[in-house]
Length: 336
Ligand code: ADP
Ligand code: MG
Image (cartoon, rainbow, N blue to C red):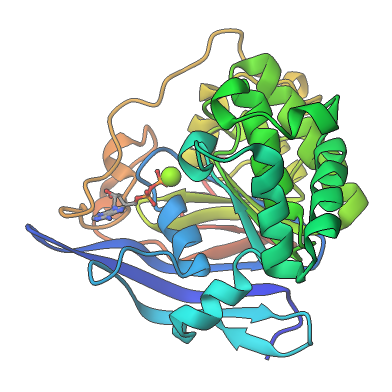
């Protein structure tokens, strides 16, 4: 049993590929309390989306598979379900009613041939069993909630008539129409330019405060989530390499990869200056571990400026460094 809203335990997710079995997620533990925001951060290919698709039951059929672990989710009725073993049908019920999602590219999730008001109303009818008129009214209400002005008129627009930021607002409206207890947002602002990105982040923060849903916020950009997440889990090569309260990650990061991530993104949060961020951003040298050929020892060792012999022989365990703060690095004590 769990007192968490979401409790992912020792999740392993694999893909069958032409080159053999690829382990994309290698024993991930993550949990989320009701109303909390957890950011999952890491470079492209670190296993963030595969983790979220595992939770949502949206892994590609036959190719992708959860081979180990549990994904415990507390449903509205109080029952705890293991999403790792739930049927497709019950996952379809849970998605869009208890767990909602927003992805990077809203255009691929919206139907180009239907007006946006009708698409939101459809979601309301499906999940809330509303009649036509009530669903229509709910759609307008949702457009107002996501700060789309002239909601009645805009409801008649088709997706291509809206800007990228507006389309993402519509996706958020569809996601939230049924009052989910968990929102999974996978790079929701990555495709947007930076001003619009900030507006969408602000909107998500406001909605979360008002509606109280928990959020799993996935991003490659630690700067984006500095102001909105309560906790952070840093992923590398399919593993969590550090997890901590956001304030600890910003002021006392332990893992060399977390430090490198922090130095590689522009930061606007108030702790950036205190942490001594240099004006020039530093790209992380080298490239993401090849999941088909992980190195022996620590996955990050080949790119790590602090690596020593031990790093290429021993896979480090996740160690507790402070309250709620864990790190997977053999040398964390020496390099602080
Ligand atoms: P990200 O952190 O960028 O979201 P992903 O979770 O998408 O990374 O990918 C993690 C790993 O899983 C990558 O090595 C990726 O190539 C692999 N992967 C993702 N989807 C598939 C798939 N459908 N088939 C094979 N490999 C996949
Ligand atoms: Mg991804």
